[in-house]
Image (cartoon, rainbow, N blue to C red; front, side, top):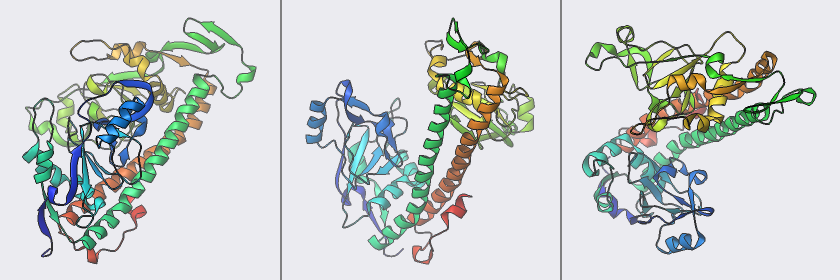
Length: 423
């Protein structure tokens, strides 16, 4: 490490700026404007961006609010400040709001991918949050503080070697994410074909009837969700009792619900904590729904036996033929219908009682069995890929810390069999 040097971020960037400091009016049909919410570790999610008019868009381009290839983008304002960092790898037709900082690396001194990785390291985030984050209600980092942030910089060849090693992880993670998105879309479309458009196998020979909630096949009906699945909620062991925590029992909080599998949790509780609270053990393949707060309506599927806090409602698997895949896809595809039933001014929520009374379609048992056979493998494969990605991220983050701190000599590292690491 004798040839590594300490520099400020402002010394190795030709430009450090941010997006627009005013927010143009949204339009239904226009050009995309991204904020911090649209930033991912792999770039800007154009699908989630709001649209602004062509005139506003081109005014902001002239103000320097469009990122260029090679720029490093980092969340600057809000709850996720400094948490999301990405490299612009290809031209993108989008302008940015001021919640996103734009760092333009000086390519004679720093490799863009290395800079993204350095800023993405947990040690760098912890240092910058402690040193530069201001604002109690809305955390933010101002541009002049980005400029004076310290960077431990190796020579360019070493930077590029580090970037090459870790890019292998990022490329596989991103490829898996694309596969997951395709499989999830296939599962959602299957649900819509069968239970929205009623184009299920044999539908040509089925007689339809009018109901209060719309047309249905003659043998189908709308029933409360509680008639199809048992429901339950969890609890929180007392924080005043240390021996209730750091156990072996998975304990799910609503912020961990991301419409996917749950195979690990941030916190775990003990058998004593379970017995001394209203928390309960739920079996694998229970579908979990967030009832309160910002994550209301978010879903998860337990891959292991687990408990939850009281803000989660569990739809429990049973011996009938309805199946967990049908429950998961129903609640995902009809999420907004459920959210629209929320109540409460300060903290909007849905109760377990509302969930139990939520009207859903009950088809004949044969149709449900066929649907599970078709939909479950698609979802199961997404779960396998998401577990692989979790393993890849853990390995990548551990290696990232050691590489950007110089603990490992990159000249002695052979490129790993990343697929084997992910298994």
